[in-house]
Length: 220
Length: 262
Image (cartoon, rainbow over all chains, first blue to last red; front, top):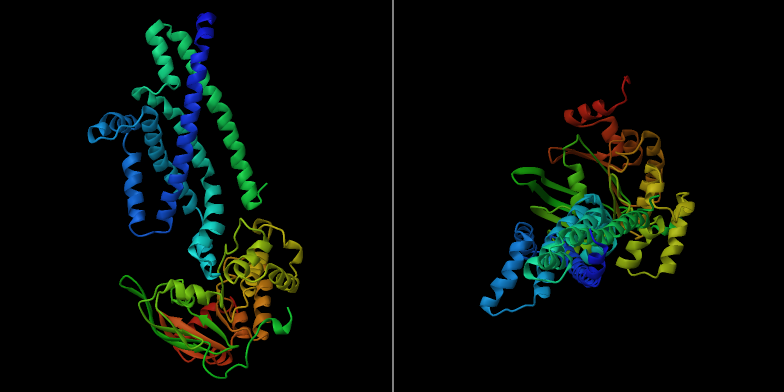
């Protein structure tokens, strides 16, 4: 183990760290929004669109991200669609994440007692008013633990981007190992880098979880 | 609550407030309501009795469009409600209040926000006016100090009284009560039933599904006895409890009488 090797690789890892963070953040935001829409379509049984939502979810939840990336990066150009590696990474991760997020939100919505919707209807609330005042505040709060687990999962899953040569953390470590044959140092740096992202993230998400419950239901 | 709070016209005059004809409801092949017809006048308190599974809860839920129906017609204030038309029902629900067995209140909103939601968002009334009415209603049920509490801080009986207040804040012309004390601890039942009795005395038009026989006897102008989705009896409350016309109703009343009573 040589500190010199680590010190020299540090700038490259810093760059890769930013790439991982950026791709994670963009994918998580897109996946969450898309997943929420998919879940609402199902919850309110919107004709046609709710079926499309189901197909979408089953399709992307049941295919490996690796294969989805190959398809986007190597397959699509044959029909004239040429996306950069980063675009493919974001698209692939977002649809995969959306499929998982949809499940997380659905779980949250299904925990709302049926009489909640019925008393909202009995008060004359419109579907949009129900979403705004009942489904979202109660459902989102109940979804937070599952959504948080998905966020962690997605950040870790960005390591798969290495297969289409996105210069994120795993890819950078692999390149360095290939060039300099110093796997101990680079793997250590890789593990530490992921831990620096994931441990604080995990703690923050737990705090948010508690905060949100208290804000919604007045819990202690 | 001031006497003028609940506006009702003289009972028994003119057309019925609610009129149901040949109502049919089925889940697949299973018919829950078979050809049910009845009227409710303004100011009338109609109590639905019957063994569990007789269809009384389903019936009351049909009366504000929470259940789809397979046939028949429902008229409210003489106006025919197009069957299973959610939009038409949504408009009428501002005039028909409903309280359920439990978990009515929105746990994510304070008592005040629960009460304000319908009047301000659905009826679009000014918040100041709604709040003034809310303060009067809360004072009337002696729950003013819980205005800013969340439902989880209330007892079951308090929750149900707030649920009733929430419905009243819409100024409904008809109130539906679907076994509102069924899931309460015994010591909470009284405060809720007393509030309902007070409403009845103020000539609120009410349809009540209940298993509380003593309460039913005191509150009912009219009793309808249902079994297997059919109205077996419909008569005045006094008459039903003293001289039930059918064996089925007699057996039912006996089965509901206090243990050990002769």
